[in-house]
Amino acid sequence: MFIAMNKFQVVPERENDFETIWKERDSYLQEVPGFVQFALLRGDVEGEYISHSTWADRDAFLAWTQSESFVKGHQQGSLKGILAGPPQVSTFQAVIDERPGSRQVDDSTPEPGRAGIQMGH
Picture 1 (cartoon, rainbow, N blue to C red):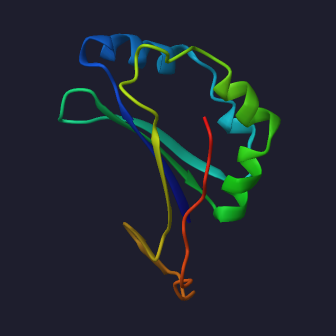
Picture 2 (spheres, rainbow, N blue to C red):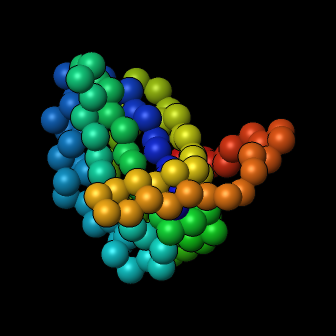
């Protein structure tokens, strides 16, 4: 399992606008191979949001970032004036994935010198 998160700092008085843009846009994620789940999370701290997507693996996520679905999904709704700065991208490989009734462990070893995935928005 692979997880990608974007942390957004939203101008506090623009939170409703930010949420409306996300609620009204088409994600195109349902048609993407390897897509597992998406959530837009509102933080307990004013203006803090995270988009959280789960993928079958890193390759599925990377393929999505190069797909027409990615382009279409990111062309909708300008966030200009809504964000206090650019989103901060973080990506993670699941080492343990535990759910009711199952537990999966990734046996790979950490890659020395890994620097994350660089993405532009």
